[in-house]
Length: 382
Image 1 (tube, helix red, strand yellow):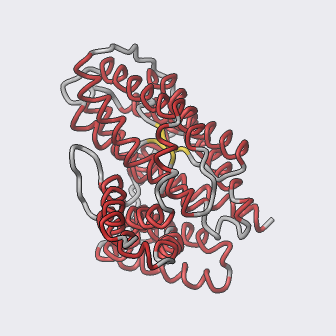
Image 2 (spheres, helix red, strand yellow):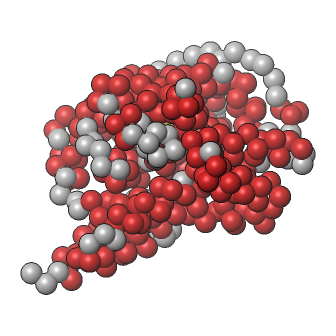
Image 3 (spheres, one colour):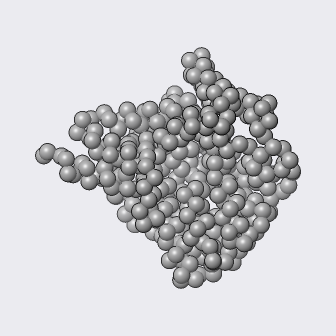
């Protein structure tokens, strides 16, 4: 029973963090494209169902904790790059991007490249992706010192006396503290059913080049690349091509209903791969399956949850993410520095990834790996 609760808690925390930390971006994206709040709920409904079903299917089939998520960086990119295009043109661009992802999977190109990257650099990149979430726990203490301070204290106490339920205790205490201190605005809460909204795609060449191609690049380098790194860092054999095949093809099908981009999760997936999810690494895939179930529940309640999320302080959600990732950040750094031969390259990878570097619309995760490989080649003595 305790293992079941631990797995379910890890899946729930992953979904809460993934949903609440980026729903505002999706809301803004839909508004930029001329949509309405009801359309936002429709997009979240379709995305949640797709992410839930694919997470469950992939995790169960491969017995590996594979969590699928929407592209947070993709949504951020689209807010600026999709301006000036219609919803129909944007959907055509989403489908074009998804086809490119599918081609990467069916040809195996991306997997062959990933297999040549040393695991130390993959771990360093993962640590670089996650470290700012850990730092933000203490940055946000400036905003909610009592709430976040108590959350950290509960986490440390829980890790010593009830490690399996430490994160569940943090979630419960965090929400209770936010409510007691008046940090939750319930005025936007209302019960409402979500409905699917079909948007016919329009394949505009400019939109495909200006919107679809950058979305593909960002999804592969800033989302799928870290997602694979998370699996490698936790010693799992990542079914890279199969995951790209499934997410790419599924993305083509759901794009007309608002599925702008789905991909391998990294930050939230790391929560499902942590020792808190299950002490046995071979059983942690059940945490991702639980996450998939919670995704589907989230999708069915999308219209209500859009208002609920708006009532929660962002600092609380981001602090929850950081606390949940403490152990993963520590283990990633430890593995990245296990061999002296890779130490300098790993540190460069970590620093570049943790930076705000963006070149040619490509984020720091990709450039971190590039910088690490260059450092390794330039400094090796053999």
